[in-house]
Amino acid sequence: MKVTVSRKAHFNAAHRLFRKDWTMEQNDLVFGKCNNPNFHGHNYELIVSVTGEIDQETGFVIDVKILSDLIKEHVENAFDHKNLNLDVQDFADLNPTAENIAVVIWNKLRKFIDADKELEIVLYETPRNFVTYKGN
Ligand code: NI
Image 1 (cartoon, rainbow, N blue to C red):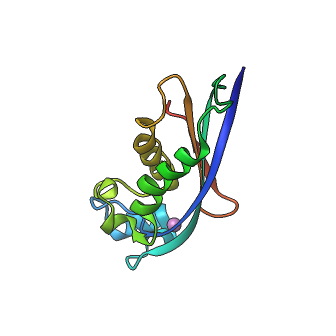
Image 2 (image 1 turned 45 degrees about the vertical axis):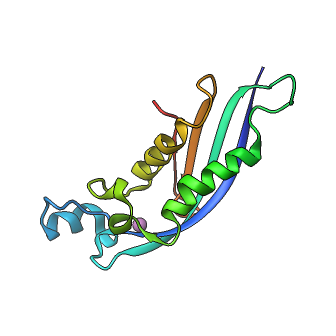
């Protein structure tokens, strides 16, 4: 019997979507307004889910306080009120799309979650646009 435990979190961050090796025209064509050289911001909403068997002693799949602290330390403290391109090393050479941010978050958290549990990241860049990454 597997159960999924989820924790919601939030961060505000700025980014610019572009490739350094493309011309401004190429970048405008593919990334549009997201290629604004002066950056733009999003209110990111994050849902981190852990799936696994219920521990028979505690009744927990994962202690949600532990999950909440992991998100706070490794995601919110790292990304909130930051410029993802300039302030966050993970995106020094990686376009900070919602897809890539979700993968970076998964990689940051995976090592803290028991190996027999599944980890899923859902990241909303806007209320209508969101991506999902489950590590495969
Ligand atoms: Ni954007």
